[in-house]
Image (cartoon, rainbow, N blue to C red; front, side):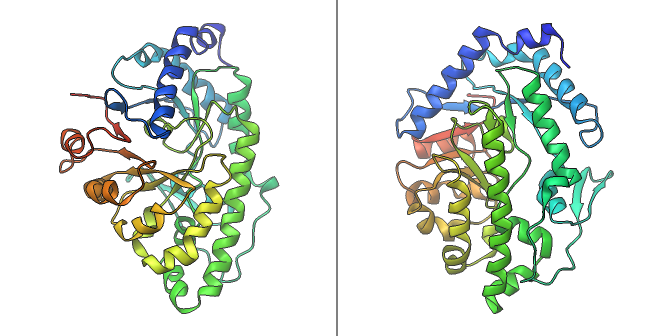
Amino acid sequence: MINNDVRKILNNATLLANRDKYIELLTSIYSGNTPSKQFYLCGITGQATADILIDPEKWVEEALISLSNNAQKSLNENVFVPLCVECSIYGVHFIDSLFGARVWHDKEAGQWYSDYLKTEIGELKKPDISKHKTWDIAKRVVKAFNDSKVSLPFFGLPTIASALNIAINLYGENILVTLMEEPEKAVRDLKIINELLIELHTWYIKNLQRKQLQPVVAAFRTQPPGYGQICGCSTHLVSPGIYKDMIMPLDEALLSVYPNGGMIHLCGSHKQHIPAWKNSRALRVFQLNDAAADDLEAYLSGLRDDQVIFLNPTNKTTAKKALSITKGKHMVVVADDPA
């Protein structure tokens, strides 16, 4: 349990007012307004040496202490610097574990991996997670965070991702082949995956303060309250037709758990889906990094005026170049240097 000094810092009225000022500016951008100056975002994630899988309560305590030590950095006049607890359990393989996949860590690579399921596509069963060890850890993290009674930090969810992302984690390329050859089997399993993802998001909405709940990678994808997020990395592997007919309805259903829809994370070549996304009411925000960021002009010209872009600058698409393209309209630049 954190001490009173840490709790006092993480409930500081000046720091809270500064955070809420930036959230109001961000909300204005989401409402379609162009800010008077470019909006920059680069938050701080609490660090912990405790193992979240062994002692989640200690992990939360250390993450909050870390944030209290860096709290004054959030008082930045040029950059939104939110303080975030990032509940990263098994990296992008959190959901895989709930479906029974073996998840393992490569110390040399510093990455989590999972083994494919042996279940045949079309026979996936929705797991009962009520007594699952991974879900128990996740719930303990939330309880410890809530019990700390701090208002300033955001809580970043574990990677719940999207139905297609998880299906590829569970089945590899076989799910892509099945989408083309036996689509009814693939869609059946995708729907089961999405049911679990919806269940998890619904639980987090009920068990976290609305003003503190944030999607994954919260420090760099902070949104106003009431917006969710899905991971669309894998959509570059499917055709526009398959995505629009089989995948997009699931993504929209997942984002619709949140009152305002939300964000899709993109990092590959996804331009083929822009016409479908333009017509989606649930897909409000597009987080672009890596190859997707270099396609900025295609997104800017292809999306609606009320859809927002979060840009992670690249060597090719620098912040300066991006601003020359967008003139700052409806864009958040994820960087700590507004120069």
